[in-house]
Amino acid sequence: MQRSPRARRHWQHVHHSAVEPTQAGQYSVLVLNDAGSVTSPGATLTVLDEPTISFVRREIARPTVRLVATPPAGVSVYAVEDQVSPTSAIDNISHGGVFDPATGKVKFGPFYDAIPRTLSYAVIIPPGCLYGRCATYTFAGTASADGVDSPIAGDDVMVVVGLHRPICRQPTVKSRSGRSRPTAQPGDGAKHGQSRPCRFRSIM
Image (cartoon, rainbow, N blue to C red):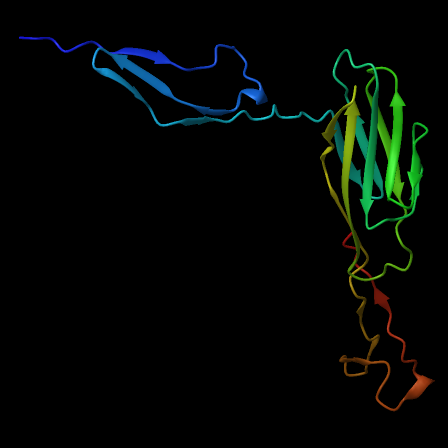
């Protein structure tokens, strides 16, 4: 009985423990034996970018926005900028930050160290907010450490609401029979007073 030739396999593979984006592409397997050779269909190697970890977290407690920055150890310089949309007036900016009304961005830094900081600013709520939802602000920002950018994580929406519509009740008085009746009857005019005391229930 004659034995068939043993196949010799030559793998085309990456010899590095960590691949680089430049090594992405098509790879195949070449199989050789005494009868000849055959090449496998190509397999695609995709190299994904290493995920960027944010070192700044946004915390919203209307109207204040806090940006809790915890830069990695060894960072020599970092900066933070946060954008409010739609653009609103900003106040009480901490740590020497500045607000650019043209872009709606609040900018902090650069800080030439790796010291954690809680940066903050306040959104000025528009006046006259009485009933229901008055405004919705969204936030998107970027933190940069030694030239590497990462998005700001955490809260990203601030909803400004007013009060419920007033609950008005007609004042009543008791008649001699013990039954309650409205103090103002149709056509009474201002004689009995037609104003209704209202109370507000906050949903803020």
